[in-house]
Image (cartoon, rainbow, N blue to C red; front, side, top):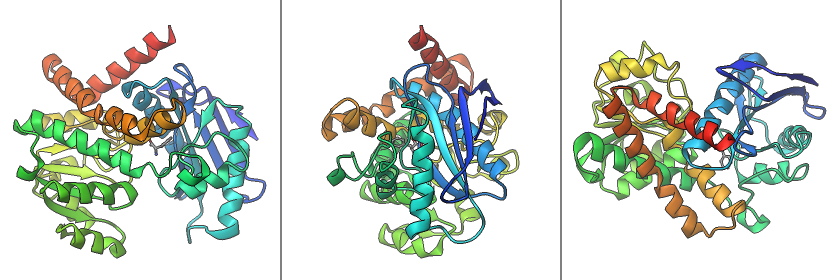
Amino acid sequence: MVTAAVDSGSMHEHVVVRRGGRSGLPIIVAVHSTALGQAIGGCRLAHYPHWRDGLTDALRLSAAMSDKCALAGLPNGGGKTVVALPPGRTPDGSTRRAILHDVGDVIAGLAGAYATGPDVGTGPDDMLTIADRTPYAFCRPVDAGGSGDSSAHTAAGVLAALRALCAERFGSADLSARSFAVLGLGRVGGHVLRMLAGAGATLVAGDVDDTRRPLADAAGATWVSPPDCLTAEVDVLVPAALGGLLTAESVPTLRCTAIAGPANNQLDALATADLLHQRGILWAPDIVVSAGGIIHATAVELHGETSEQAAVRVRGIADTLTDVLRTARATGSTPATAARLRARQRIRNGHR
Ligand code: PHE
């Protein structure tokens, strides 16, 4: 095992990179901060050109989780697990089990400093498999004692955020008056699309995976390619796939007025927030918008709340976002900067 402290903005507390004993694959667990409490963050199974790219991703994603937890008012810090899959098929069956048991062993070695949850490429059943090796796995299926699939709760938080964003940007929280482009129809994106359709919104949708087109059809959304979805002429772009889509190259091509979605790390760099600001595009920070899953899971599993009580907390994302957007406007900064400052302040205060 290589255990290293790595710098990525503020320095991570603990980073483990281990070749899984069963799977032979790189298992990466990055614990960014436990200043506010146990670090939490999902387990991502994704293809990377090289495991070092997976490490870079884990470092960035775990740091963002610290801010996400702080902004959500949780007594938790940020972490993330990345399993860097080689090109090819997504593992299933016994191969998948071996990977998840390797993940569970690394987490067990952290003795409670970090707990995982579902993320891109994993779900509740995977959490149950990880739980064979460590108790620190959120969102196991409900019949196995967990809080279950978090994607609908993440989506509920996104809807709350979209209402708050529309109220700030267009003067009304009524979603039926607005058009949205949902980019990515995975677990969370699919829910968001359905909920927007239910609210009477005008919709465009796209995904790299063509088999998801029926989801768009069922929601009455116009199906377009991912590049066309990104640059669609709509009121609000909803990034719901992988991060890094807002860049110096892509921002000039956007034709939306505002952006809010559940994808993690949407900006390739903080400077891109300034480019959005200059173009008059209001960006709702992903670290605020995407917190519904962790808010629900921790409320139910750590604090013994009912799902209804947790749902009220998830809707609180609207107030947090409104606060961040108003602070940004009042101080002449970007929402990205306002959100970060607020998170760092909370981490400092909580730590003291
Ligand atoms: N994928 C979730 C996120 O990025 C991770 C998570 C969900 C962790 C639920 C714990 C519980 O916020």
